[in-house]
Length: 231
Image (cartoon, rainbow, N blue to C red; front, side, top):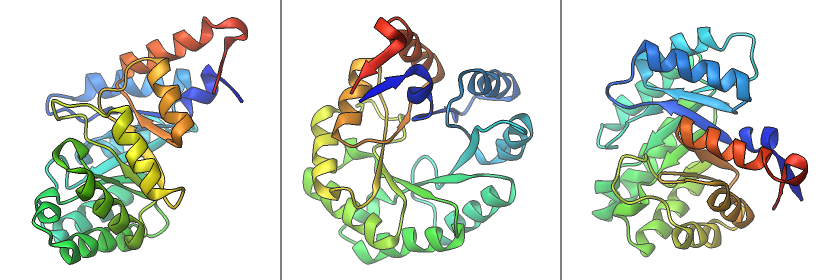
């Protein structure tokens, strides 16, 4: 199978979710997304309606986070946040799992937390951020199973806010656990076309990558013979 730069762009969402990001960064990001055809732009909740307006008339989707970045918000707050994101035009919601509750083996709490956000989101897909650098292999397995039971659309490896990035070993683990039962989004420390294609071959179908690294990846593809990469 061969993927062009355009195909790769439709696998990547780019984001402006750092504390300091404001209108300047979001304006730049939305223009890049429209020019390159990235699948989505994600922004912090208060900016989602603005991003929606900036992307009007394009095929680029709008995303926003619930319970971000710690996941420690109460379920009620996450539900309200998801409802407001959708009201403001979000096409997808990336929800932060309650890592502390999972590590405390309060699986019923985690399941209810995710299930209620999924229910509130309705037809809007929910991706659950696991923050795998804080989890053991067994905890990752439990987290994935809970996301599947709760009806989430994807498990997402991390926020990209932790020192440790997503690794090939951990992605292999997740792919083996979920076995096609739920989508996988990789985020955090993904740099370069080689890393992206390795993850894609394993079964990752969405990527969260910063704008500059994403542009570099597209340029890598364009410089290959025929402008395509074998996967």
